[in-house]
View 1 (tube, helix red, strand yellow):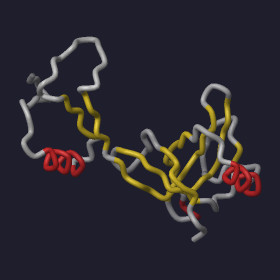
View 2 (view 1 turned 135 degrees about the horizontal axis):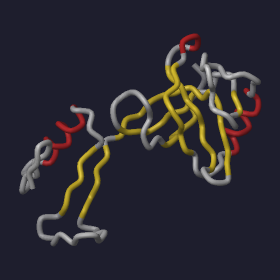
View 3 (view 1 turned 90 degrees about the horizontal axis):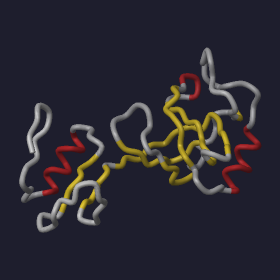
View 4 (view 1 turned 90 degrees about the vertical axis):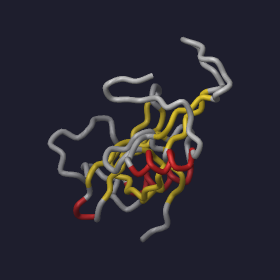
Length: 154
């Protein structure tokens, strides 16, 4: 239950304090198991619960890519229009007609960021469309990002 970089307590009497502390530290979340359930090596169990800390960010769409293997993805950036910084990819899953219609209007030939080697197979768009994204972890590259909504124009 203990090692050089971890310690597993028997239980937490006030889980809200644990969740607040892990969020303040910028950790992904907490994994917990019911006290009265046995540990079953190598088996999945409903006794284990993962609580992820999600945050919401408003990001600007700079491109999109669709493939059979990975589905639809948006490439997003943050910052002011003249100083955008690439943040990562948002997986869409299902198609959203309104989004694709808007992206078709904003298509442009060149990448809107000063990359030496921009990704291939991307359709670039004028950076005018913002999306609200739920993700976890610290600010920086996105992790497990999910699009929540299209944002109204600024």
